[in-house]
Length: 93
Image (cartoon, helix red, strand yellow):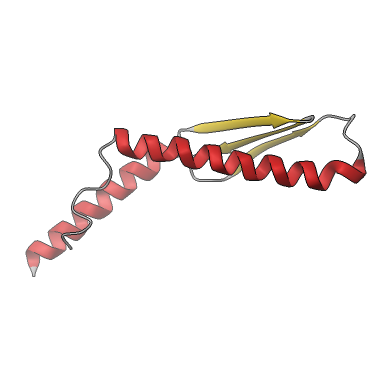
């Protein structure tokens, strides 16, 4: 019982360390005059829209840029998790 609690605490500590490391990562993507920056917690930290982007195309371009930024951030975060060794013991609890 206490061994399981210790494993849970260790797992929680690993997850917190991983979350802190991921928060330091940043991904940028720019297309058609829109630039999005996202941190490792999948939070958009910056949106820059060129004044030449027409209002009628804004929604479509913005959606595409956000979706691509998310995909790129997920790939970067996946690599970071692998580099840090993942979260060990997750199947043992």
